Amino acid sequence: MEETKHVIASEIFRPQFDNISANERNAISALKCNSKINLKKADKGTTTVILDTAQIRNEGSEQLSNDKFYKPISSPIVHNTARKAKELVNKLYRSGHIDLMTHKWLITICLKQPRIPEFCTLTKIHKKRPVGRPILFGTSGPTERISSFIDSLLQPVAIKQESYIKDTTDFSNFIENTQIPDNVVLATLDVSSLYTNIPQEEGIDVVCRFYEDHYEQKLPIPINDLRELMRLILEENSFKFNEKHFLQTQGIAIRTKMAVAFSVVHFMADLEKRLLAASPFKPFVWKRFIDDMFSLWTIRIPMEEVSIFVDFANPS
Image (cartoon, rainbow, N blue to C red; front, top):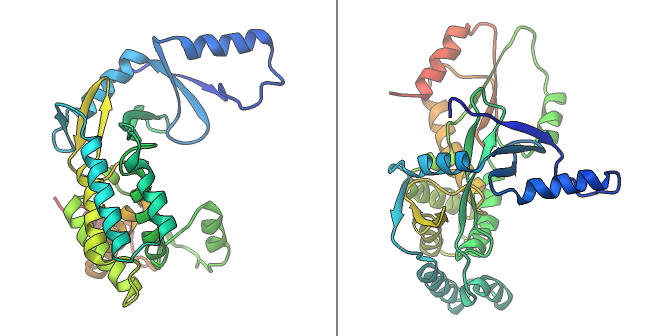
């Protein structure tokens, strides 16, 4: 990837074609039909990235060769996963924890032919060295709807966190309504490869604890059922790439519905509470959008102490 050649073509796939010529339309069609090149949106923004197809396959294969996160499997397991999902959904319905409409919606994919999720990468062109972010397209996959259901249960837990920032508008409003003293130090941090670095069983334990604390005596579904659903989503996250089948063994797949809420509650809410409580140096303002952290430090805190905080957050 050191010799990566990439061409950036903004708005190649525009939804309106009224203002382009027939030649331009033909050129776009030719690009889309050319099997030697790969066209996808960039990881951030609306830019389109054009890369050599072989190069994309090589990068995907390189990422999937990391046995810390993935392992090859001999054949698809989606049918078995769908069967397990069906059993869990029926259990929730029989015990009265979901209504008939929710049951019908959750069970639909389990009754149909489940689609095998597909792995791809979206290029991070904002990095000095363009690399691909691993993405799973799991539409109609065996755990898609139960993941969406879990997400609806975890979202209220995620947004309850004191540091929570919803989006850019929310952050702008926060800044406009915050009195910031003169001579402060601004520091921003983020987590490296958040989604793939979350230990699955630890994540489930932390999320269940936050879930129980948030809902108290009015749990939407029992803790054990929540745990079983999340474990199925995480431990049977199978997919295909270049006609080969794989299983993700650590972390959570980007694009599965519950990924953000699960990561925010576990890896960020729990981590930041422990970090801020234990660190000898603390910012006076700490806000976070998923894993992007914004902090302000008073002038009496020299930059060396901010660096100490960062080192403390990254134990060797």
